[in-house]
Amino acid sequence: MRYLDPKNDLTFKRVFAEHPHLLISFLNNILPLEEGRKIEHIEYLPAELIPEIPLFKYTIVDVRCLDNFGRQFIVEMQMLWTDSFKNRVLFNTSKAYIKQLEKGEHFEFLQPVYALSLVNHNFENEMDAYFHHYKIVTVDEPKRHLPGLEFVFIELKKVKAKNLKEKALGVLWLRFLTEIENRTENLSPDFMEHPDLKEATDILKESAFNKAELETYDKYWDSVMVEQALLDGAIAKGYKQGINEEKENIIIIGHKEGISIESLARVTRLSVPEVEVILKKAT
Image (cartoon, rainbow, N blue to C red):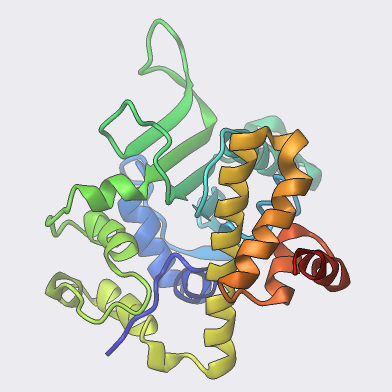
């Protein structure tokens, strides 16, 4: 039996956007929620239309929901990382908080918004910890804070590097995201010991997806690979100055690696004819 990677757009949403009880289990065991304030029910919300970080359209997967207390949760899987992503998360979460007033409610009825960012890159390289919890606190007394916005960033590669063997449900969910990779065949028996994890792994069985879905799954990885190469090249050359030239390089290299012209066009924001012209010039 082979399994698909849960970090893919298709599989992440299949598990967490189509099975609310699994999302509730995940959030309750990952987020630092107040005692007595565990999530009991959720209502899915439509994705927010926010400004995209240029050229990184396909590396962010999100699920949004509202719980029985009126709190909002924004869960994002971020396959790549730039410093701009923190600003994006702050903007997105603040916007969700402010938009509550559109209902005509008073300030005192505003409910908290939690942002959970699952990052498939390391961004705090000087720290060993993989779990980062941010909220608005007083400088002199950090235990005192302003309620409303809370942010959790989890560096998944650090989780994997630690080779965790704990069986606490929160740790099992993180292991679920890091130990199961593309076409994994052998799963840890620990996942079979809890009904939520067993159900989530069953959802990832390759045989549960049809041909069209598997093609979509593979195209997503193509997009991530191209955007990673584009990011690496842009950083090396200077983002604004080198981006057009880097697009051409990525198209040429990606085509040689067998990535379809349609995927290259989608990721580089060019038309198929423009990509074909670049490839023709390169021959």
